[in-house]
Length: 234
Image (cartoon, rainbow, N blue to C red):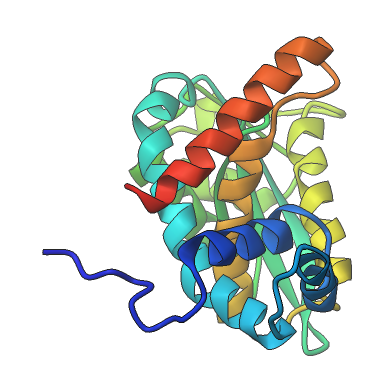
């Protein structure tokens, strides 16, 4: 029998789920979430929100990934876009690798201290283990990608060109907004945990508002919110 993960908490699971969603989905600080919940008559400390995000965020993200895995694997093997972005942790530069598919769905996020061949190889193997091998991989001109794919044996699937990788570069923007609201990160493990959680929630609520008609967007948004609330019952 699976134990209830909320069994030691006096706060209801619905409030915990709402606080986690507000903090991860929107570029809000911990105190912003505290104030917004206070307006709704929910009295809590911002440190409680921090603890809930750290404890339950990965759990909610894992449920989203499990629910979407069977559907995603059918269409994520066409074209991948890979890119890395600089992230500072306590003043030390690290690298956040990200793989997205042709529709902007974030497939994998991986944090490393370097961006050499070994880091690129580990990142590629991790993504391919979960989603399989894509038909085309679009990258920038970083030579670590070519060296890693030559080791794997799919160098013929790599595409490099100006503006071809805008899909991956644009996928960093939601994370950058969250990074500024959080005043950066202090540990590599915390960054890895948060980017994985943030990617899953971003995928779940990314409804292509700029592409859909208003009524279509509202229908998809209601469906996404309903699925999010149903995670507690899963």
